[in-house]
Length: 403
Image (spheres, rainbow, N blue to C red):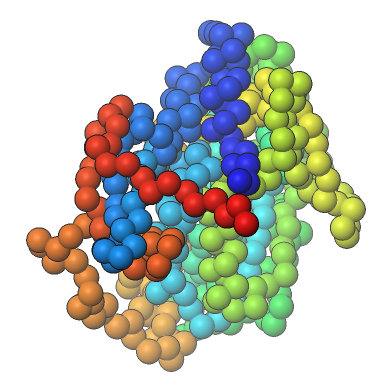
């Protein structure tokens, strides 16, 4: 029988207790909650249900444990992404889409780790204001645009690397709302212009946060609490180019959805990148973006405590939204703006979802989301059990072919 694939949950279960003890007093409550959720995900600790194939000749029975639904859990993000994408699919416009990336310099990333809520929020605000301002300028696009922004805080090796991915339609609505203004083919906005305005806006916002005493500094950065020291720290950053990257435009709405499905609900490392683990370390696959071609795909081994530390480095503060919408897509007037854009693009109006005759009605049996693995029939939920309890029914034994 094939060995089960390695998961982050396995690493936490086997080595998490020792790591927590060794780092007692230096682990946040949020990080402890994430570890606990991942360790308990899809185990009897969270309860679950038993489903049986409705085909009596088959009768296959399985136990499905509940998910933790924590946004940092590698196992739970697939379902969350599918639900989110179903809502976004109906909002896509019949235009090309562009992908922009705004990255904080390394020295800012260092203090961002001590001020996640404030600085991640400033990263969102500064990058969105930059893009909306330049797009509205008649010298560039001269239109009101919509933005979907996604925060990532990691590099491929799980180091702290805060950056925002933006997905932007290739055009926008004119200031008077009378027409759709398309961008030039294969070109949205000048990354050099975006970079310099982003740098100015972010530094202005950061200084304002410092003046308002919203930033905290610890360890080697404690000196930055002083106004003069902080100004000296920022001075070199005003002279260097900040990285704003424009990737190749997407091939169409389907490509946008495929991209979003990979990026919106991603966590610091997926289970499929894990190779092996032992007391000496965790080996995983990563990309070296400094190298082009197949040579960029490598493996790395980190000591197990360091792997856990890097994973938990990316736990977000409670309530901080990592997916945000701006401009035409801001939640206040989102539906009206999208409807107007569709009208200007001569797209058919969105149809109201018809009633699904197969939809569950009151009194219908509860269905398991996946078909029977043996015959493809419907799986009917025959039992639910609470957290920490064991089900009454037992699963069908796995058949092993010994021929």
